[in-house]
Length: 188
Image 1 (cartoon, rainbow, N blue to C red):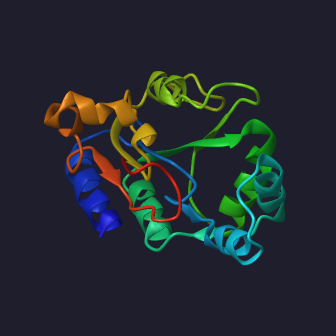
Image 2 (cartoon, helix red, strand yellow):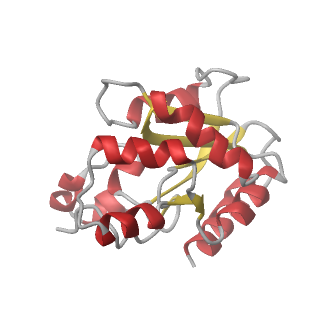
């Protein structure tokens, strides 16, 4: 359902745009790739998430595509859309993440991981996509949509947005598409 909505948003927003001049930004975990097996393994072992356990999981490269993700990425790419994956996986985990995307033939033009030791704020990386300053960029891009599973997968939004009223959420359903994530996160 979320990817069908994202398809409609991108189709409408991309009409008449020059090939290679517009983009969609997506999160990786629980948006394009699923870590359900990791969560199941934690539950079975009665463990909680730790950075060490997460890093070991990432190194295993066993994440799989979320339903609808591959087809959506292919549809973005077909009319000339660029795809930027902006993830809070660490830069030291980025090669393993790219390997999963490559193995599963998940299209992407840029994978912007969080620099090790830096805050999880994605806004500077969102800005790098729009400005065309990421490695391998060919110029600025008009970002027509964002897809994610967490409020922080969208520009300038945090959990505090709920205190700003409905206006903070006006772009949801028109430029922002959120996938449900029942496994982890904040739901206040």
